[in-house]
Image (cartoon, helix red, strand yellow):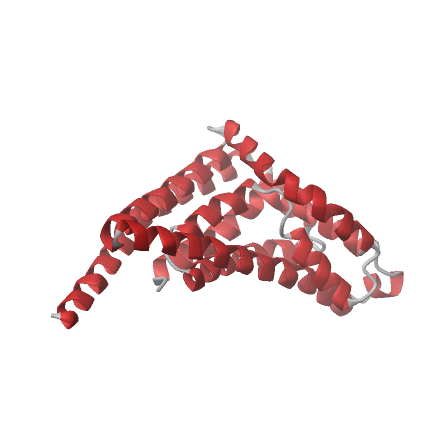
Length: 241
């Protein structure tokens, strides 16, 4: 099972990654909010309900993607043996986090090309999403969120590799849901405090601090979760003897 450090790291990763995606995702929320009837936009509770529903759809899709990635990871664990497979997967996950940190700091801008991976899928989904605009009901808002989650995003792809490293389908889903929940505070408030968030997101110093924090979390996750899994595996071995 996922340990608290992994889930906390995934949540913080989502929280920090919104510095990268607030321009893209914040813009989508803004456009969708503008497509709502004026009376809905003018009533803050109603507007909030729509924005929350978009985001719930997005997080559900993240969970599904994490479920698939975790199942693939579990297959790797079974074929490679628990100890070896876990070390390999955890190392890949930590390297992904370090890559995210370097990307956020601006020291490795080449990583932006990772986003090209999802373009073929998005080309198929984007026309479906476009048909849902204007989003006139909450079910439509949920459907749009389910599609919006597949928008090409390097941060999501990096976290998916981390979900793969969790070594189980449920663990992978939980990792991605924790990441999605981390993105929630920024994206829920994007419509209400966009200018402040945008200024913060474009601050080179803020991005560097956040990037370095993610790198530090990556190094921590490389050791502590592995140790926990190792002890758990040893206990299982003793129970079988």
